[in-house]
Image (cartoon, rainbow, N blue to C red; front, side):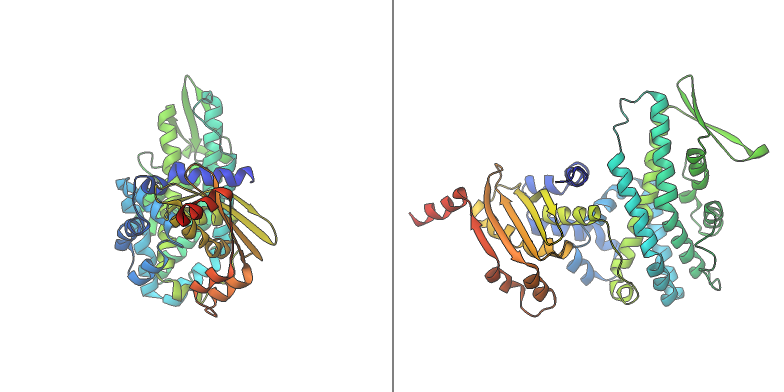
Length: 400
């Protein structure tokens, strides 16, 4: 397994409650209900929520749970979600066409976020100078690469809501400072673009980072922003600057999550306009691992080749392995949905980490299920099940 994939899988356990839910005895049905209860207030189409809660919306649910724990972030999240809804009411076609147009740039920004995630280092032991440098590097990357396309698309929605003619004109090349300035002046929730308590606009955070207008003096981190006579200085203790970094990340999460929920809520409208967009493998692995975690399995390894994908899942529940191995065999279709290769292999490990069952399926069979040529239940007749010696013993015991 690639080290970057391992970091994603480790993150599912570290940053999400799903595996601990299963370890504490919550059933897949109870975990799904947790997701639905969490997201239901933010959906107008409850049938879509119920249908896509496990396959699509698990990462969004985890993000919303974190946002709900931050009163400021929760208010900002509702503001952004309502922005999209009001834009849809003002001009549905412009709203969804605009989102579809920006999708590839937003996905590229998310890809850059993943690159930053893989290069992230533990800042706890860094000397203050190196901590300052690394944290500002994070801030510069997240705003310039990941937030900027989201901000531009959000500004498009603000313009649509306000009835501005030709709302997308010039947005692609608009300077970040002008984007943030227009959002600050016209959105009605200016704090999102100049987060408290500092009140520094996002483009100025980016400028401090990219222009290296920062230094350390007497255990204080100092940043300088603005130009000429308007130049200002801001000072942070180490813990204050770490809080600032986290606040920038929550701004990214708020906008990205609100946008995702809005588009899934209106998926039938959005899909009509959306062209194929390539999602980075890391993001697909996160969705896959989150999905199987809701069923009480931990994705502990994955190998992605051109014609074959192998996923290794480990049981984190106390349920009988004989029942769980059959449940795990169904993940052939789940894996194929994320990585549609010619051959899909799923290895099921019991709670002690021993291999119990290997399920091998064909991509062509999964494709027939996807296009409703055959029912999902038929896939069980087409996969190949290979029991390990320990796996065979469960059936030997039953026979005796």
